[in-house]
Length: 411
Image (cartoon, rainbow, N blue to C red):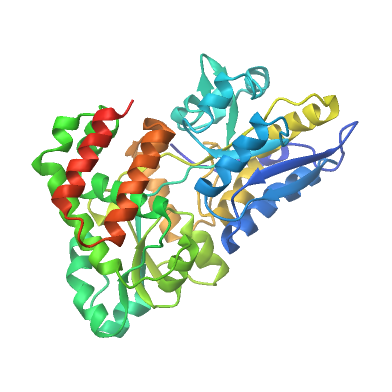
């Protein structure tokens, strides 16, 4: 995928100077509340407000795991918002099947989304029974190890080039009172860290065999045992983190209190707000330096069916605004993610974002768990790895057996 500067494309987006007839307020719910996230969502609000409508911010503190049940409850309970964030994939599948979400197929055809959204899998994740129900707004990838250059300098060891070197450097970090690996206490963080280890240590084929093919026999084998050994190393390095939220863990890396963090590229938003420079203050290893592959997950907006005709019109304006080239660039540069449009240029991207763009350009991408697993399976997996990271008496062998049971029951 080639990202190139198309100044004319920017001008061809939504006409921000004139508001539409019947402009109205539209509540938008999301879980973007950290410093970097708030800066990014402000770009979306500014672009929508410029159409003459009004973005009513419905931020829900906490993670997606906290926010999604609230969002779903409102929609099913007859109190829908104007638009709501979910991740690409299967999170809104039941809402769509229940007829509660708006079909955007006509708008998508009019604006040629199939020609501008790249990779194609993003729009595929918004499609059910041939109809498009959401607007992808970014490409986020989980598969990164973020490193504090200061922490390794203070410990007197070289900045690691891969996961194995990172593990080897842990004793030197601990000797200086530095937590080697920052992992917050929320279940999605520990589960996500394992998934990244599965892809990076185990390899892409291994990851897909487990989560795409649901091969329980393979999940019980020696290749996955190696991944659980790596997860055991991770929990030992993370034992003194003592924070809950992901951005608190990121702040430990920013301040040099931790050597590194396995986290998605949204962590870049926090480094940016803190004034840190990629390559100077912090380093990044896509695929943990072992497997330069990333998943094309990310965020999308769904639009519940509304009875109010004016708000329904505003929904269409918001959908158009979200994919406008200017909005895409402004939002994603603040978010740390990559635009879903293949015709825009991120010429101000930092070193880490450029690594992600290069991987995308080479086509080294895979679907992620939100696209491959149901929410029920995701929850079971989160419960397992939350316990695994918190309870040292749960052996890698016993955890692997429980993992096999989850995969065997997955659909």
